[in-house]
Image 1 (cartoon, rainbow, N blue to C red):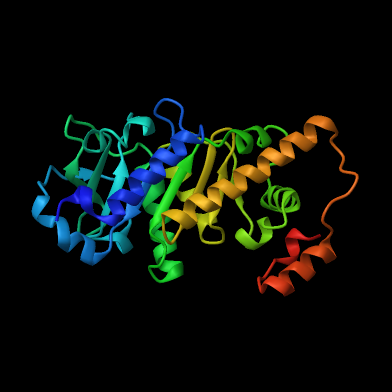
Image 2 (image 1 turned 180 degrees about the vertical axis):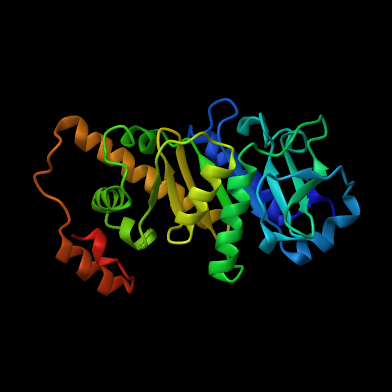
Length: 272
C-alpha cells in the first residue's frame, strides 16, 4: 500500500491543514506527531528507505522500535497538504529508545521537528498511562492561550478554572484540567521533562508565551481538545477586554452538578 493512501496519513495531513487554516501555524510554527500502529507499519514498510541513526537527546525506552509520523523542522504547515513528502517524515526509534532514523519523507533533506524530545517524552508518558491508547501529540501557537500567559498567574488551577468557566463543555472535554509550564527554551531536555511530568496528569499543557500541547487517542479528539481550549481562551480574552471582573459565572456547585450529570470527575482543587 502507498503511504499516501493510508487513513493515518490522510488524517495527519488533514489535521495539519486544519491547524494552518485556524491561524495557529505562522511560518514554520508548531509541530505534530503520530505513533503508528503495528499493522500500519506492516502495510507500508516496503516503502521504507532507512537513513542514518541520530541521537534523540532524551531516552524513551517505552518507545523502543516504535514508528512515528512527524512534521519536519523548519517546514511550514501550509505546505503539508501539497508537499507532504517534503514537509513530514516517518521515523523509527532504536531498540534502546535513544536514537531515531528517518525511513520515509523529507525528500529534500532536513530533520524531524526540533521539539522531537518533547513529543517523544509526551508519547512515552501517555503510552504508559493510557496503556497505549493515545497516539497523537500536537503543538500549536494558539493566539489567545499565548495572550493569557501574559495576564494570568502561571498556575494549573488558575488557568483551568478560568477556562472551565468560559463554556459549559470545557469541564466535560478536559475534566482533568490543564497544566502550565513557565517560559523555558524550547527544543531541549529541560522543557521536555517538565512537559512530560505534567502530561502524566493532563491531556493539555500550556507553554508560557509560546503555545499549547494537546494529546489524544486520534486526530479528531486531539484537534477537538486544542480547539476547545483555544476557543475558551478567546472568550476569556474578550471578557477581560471589557472588564476584568465577571458579573456572573459558573460557580463551584454548578460544576459539581455538571460533573454528576455528565459522569466526569472534576478535581476539587480546581473548584476552590
